[in-house]
Image (cartoon, rainbow, N blue to C red; front, side, top):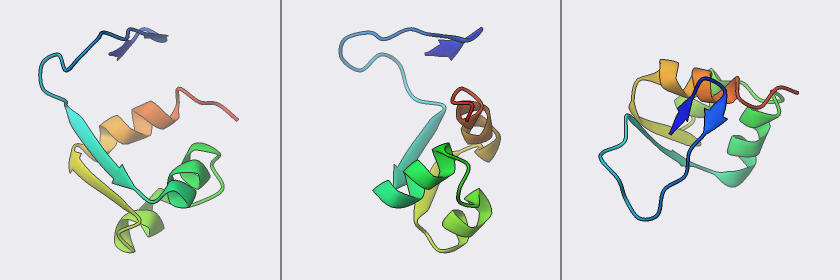
Length: 65
């Protein structure tokens, strides 16, 4: 769980995710580094989302470059 600029990790699967991401490793790293467009990665299916894209953008802000 990510909340208030902190990450909490628990063992096993706890609850259900608000967002599930399936990504090509290069596209994912490019997104995190802000080198690649999220929109392009989504259109070319290099990154696939189950959940709100807003959550992914919020996640990306956890890794400032």
